[in-house]
Image 1 (cartoon, rainbow, N blue to C red):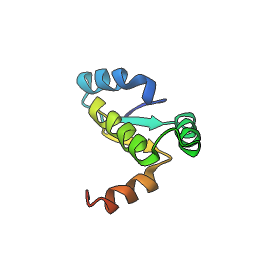
Image 2: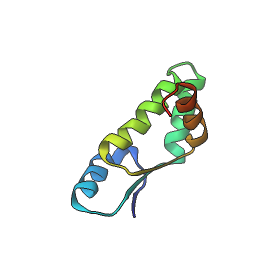
Image 3: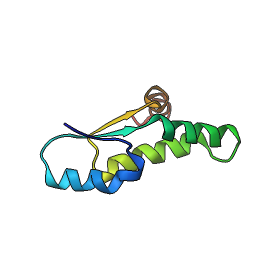
Amino acid sequence: MMMVKPGMPYLDIIRRLKDASALPIAAYHVSGEYAMIKAACERGWLDEKDVVMETLMCFKRAGADIILTYYAKQAAQWIKDDGLY
Protein backbone atom coordinates (compact mmCIF):
# COMPACT_ATOMS: atom_id res chain seq x y z
CA MET A 1 0.00 0.00 0.00
CA MET A 2 1.10 3.55 -0.69
CA MET A 3 -0.35 6.37 1.41
CA VAL A 4 -0.68 10.00 0.40
CA LYS A 5 -0.74 12.39 3.34
CA PRO A 6 -2.21 15.00 3.33
CA GLY A 7 -4.77 13.88 0.79
CA MET A 8 -6.58 16.97 -0.46
CA PRO A 9 -3.65 18.97 -1.85
CA TYR A 10 -2.25 15.88 -3.58
CA LEU A 11 -5.19 14.50 -5.56
CA ASP A 12 -2.98 14.66 -8.66
CA ILE A 13 -0.35 12.54 -6.91
CA ILE A 14 -2.99 9.98 -5.94
CA ARG A 15 -3.98 9.72 -9.61
CA ARG A 16 -0.35 9.39 -10.76
CA LEU A 17 0.36 6.67 -8.20
CA LYS A 18 -2.82 4.82 -9.16
CA ASP A 19 -1.87 4.93 -12.83
CA ALA A 20 1.73 3.83 -12.20
CA SER A 21 1.33 1.11 -9.56
CA ALA A 22 -0.61 -2.06 -8.86
CA LEU A 23 -0.41 -1.38 -5.12
CA PRO A 24 -3.49 -0.11 -3.28
CA ILE A 25 -3.46 3.67 -2.83
CA ALA A 26 -4.58 5.22 0.46
CA ALA A 27 -5.55 8.85 0.96
CA TYR A 28 -5.27 10.31 4.45
CA HIS A 29 -7.75 13.11 5.14
CA VAL A 30 -5.58 14.72 7.81
CA SER A 31 -6.71 16.48 10.98
CA GLY A 32 -6.04 19.94 9.57
CA GLU A 33 -8.40 19.33 6.66
CA TYR A 34 -10.99 17.95 9.10
CA ALA A 35 -10.61 20.98 11.38
CA MET A 36 -11.01 23.44 8.49
CA ILE A 37 -14.26 21.81 7.40
CA LYS A 38 -15.55 21.65 10.98
CA ALA A 39 -14.75 25.32 11.64
CA ALA A 40 -16.41 26.52 8.43
CA CYS A 41 -19.50 24.42 9.09
CA GLU A 42 -19.80 25.61 12.68
CA ARG A 43 -19.84 29.18 11.36
CA GLY A 44 -22.58 28.31 8.89
CA TRP A 45 -20.38 28.88 5.85
CA LEU A 46 -20.68 25.32 4.52
CA ASP A 47 -23.05 22.38 4.70
CA GLU A 48 -21.04 19.72 6.52
CA LYS A 49 -22.57 16.64 4.92
CA ASP A 50 -22.30 18.03 1.39
CA VAL A 51 -18.69 19.15 1.82
CA VAL A 52 -17.54 15.94 3.51
CA MET A 53 -19.19 13.65 0.97
CA GLU A 54 -17.77 15.69 -1.92
CA THR A 55 -14.33 15.59 -0.31
CA LEU A 56 -14.46 11.81 0.05
CA MET A 57 -15.72 11.47 -3.52
CA CYS A 58 -12.74 13.56 -4.69
CA PHE A 59 -10.37 11.04 -3.12
CA LYS A 60 -12.21 8.19 -4.82
CA ARG A 61 -12.28 9.91 -8.22
CA ALA A 62 -8.55 10.60 -7.92
CA GLY A 63 -7.99 6.85 -7.53
CA ALA A 64 -7.79 6.17 -3.80
CA ASP A 65 -8.64 2.59 -2.88
CA ILE A 66 -8.60 3.40 0.83
CA ILE A 67 -9.64 6.65 2.53
CA LEU A 68 -8.61 7.35 6.11
CA THR A 69 -10.65 10.15 7.64
CA TYR A 70 -11.83 11.46 10.97
CA TYR A 71 -15.26 11.58 9.35
CA ALA A 72 -15.42 7.81 8.82
CA LYS A 73 -18.20 7.08 11.32
CA GLN A 74 -20.27 10.11 10.34
CA ALA A 75 -19.85 9.47 6.60
CA ALA A 76 -20.86 5.83 7.07
CA GLN A 77 -24.00 6.96 8.89
CA TRP A 78 -24.86 9.47 6.15
CA ILE A 79 -24.37 6.80 3.49
CA LYS A 80 -26.61 4.41 5.42
CA ASP A 81 -29.26 7.08 6.07
CA ASP A 82 -29.35 7.97 2.38
CA GLY A 83 -29.81 4.31 1.42
CA LEU A 84 -26.57 4.26 -0.55
CA TYR A 85 -25.30 1.14 1.18
